[in-house]
Amino acid sequence: MESRERALAGRLTGVRAEIARACERAGRAPDTVTLVAVSKTHPPEVILEAIEAGLRDFGENRPEEAAPKIDAVAALTPAQLRWHMIGHVQSRKARLVTHDYALLHSLDSVRLARRLDTYLSVQGRALDVLLQVNMSGEATKEGWDAYQWDERSALRAALWRDVEAVLALPGLRVRGLMTMAPLVEHPEAARPIFTALRTLRDALRESFPRAGWDELSMGMTDDYPVAIEEGATLVRIGRAIFGARQVR
Image (cartoon, rainbow, N blue to C red; front, side, top):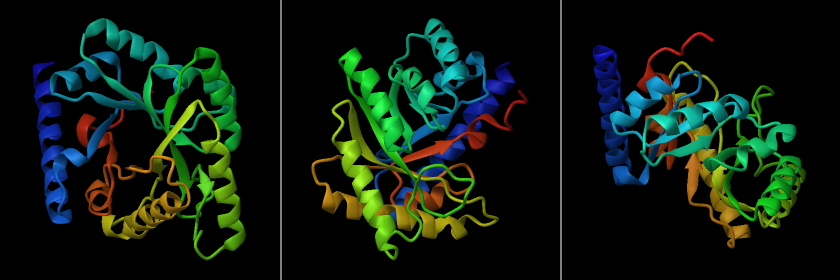
């Protein structure tokens, strides 16, 4: 157990050092980047080790699996944690993400937004969300289609209409955008995706200044330094912290 904890702490130190180097290259302060440890598939005792190493932000992928884990972790530690839902949320499971979470990274449709707003209005609360957009055009990626949005007028108009519809819902507070880059052999190949997300965010900020557009959730284990150089404020790191994903 002790050697495993040391290994995790060592990997975390390496990730934080890499974040600091990427921020230095971009002329940013390291505290402008939130490290979200992707704890999906990892049990509460491993998350506790990460907490003891200093982590406070954790990302889960499946609402139904995360709920008992969040409760179990709360029973193990008094630490104030921030849970992030980073995976696709089916509309029928929307209720499961209306509590426990500091931020929903993966709001990907008006339908889901309206379902969330219905539950939140009953609860009398609001939820911070990011709009997930598909910048690469890959059919396997979730999110609003935003591939070449600046060259496709009909797509841009549809995206803008949907954003306006989401912003009209009182239970949701839009804080920015999220995307997933394609899996590439070299991290540099993902840079155009991250640049495109930042450019889209800037355009939306100009069109909808009443919303908050400060957050860009982009970058994972294989490409997060490049994402930080392009403006990421949240990076979602799993394997580089926890090691190989546990077999389910």
